[in-house]
Image 1 (cartoon, rainbow, N blue to C red):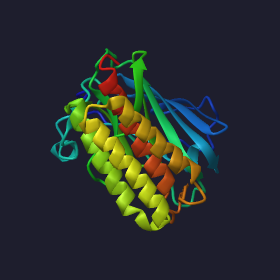
Image 2 (image 1 turned 120 degrees about the horizontal axis):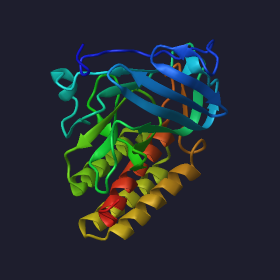
Image 3 (image 1 turned 30 degrees about the vertical axis):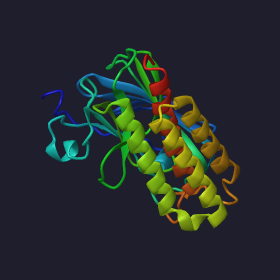
Length: 276
């Protein structure tokens, strides 16, 4: 069977011991507020995956709903969801985190998803990024850090769905502009979830970051993004809703805003230090 057409799914079950031997996964463990698993798929594709929460309730292997599969890099339906990127050559793996509605998982704030694979190799200026998509929609960049070993990437989110490591075809300026637009749209979408005064202050800081970026003042833009992040976090759970739960009956607005601002900051850092 072709390595690119091979398909496997791993299912993490709460009944499994830490060192369980299950098709697709080795040593899946829960340690406090994090879950770690080693993904092993047909074709020699593998990765160490860690999902870490700031504040989580009901976390176990079954309630997280983590799975992985090898996908076809020529799948036109999948490629149509990647308008600005292509699948990373050497790692055509789709990760999914879909907590079951009755699993009891809930968390506050954000979580970090770290993927470490030897199928890819990090070099300074690498175009590799981690993208996410929700409900079959377009994938978008959520990268907040990356580095060697052989390739290690971390993304941050306030909700769950599908994840891919891709090769980003955009310039850093295009990525920054897209992330500014996305964060602005997100803020507008959740206007009703916060006071008018708080919304106005967040909008002012975001617009200031955009102006600094357009003027080439990258350090000043980063400072404004940090100020935006600090304001969101300072009102998280009081002035801005910050809870996600498996029933999907709440919007984790603070988590979404923080995650979007953090990946924007990552791209601004790349602008400031192109060799990262």
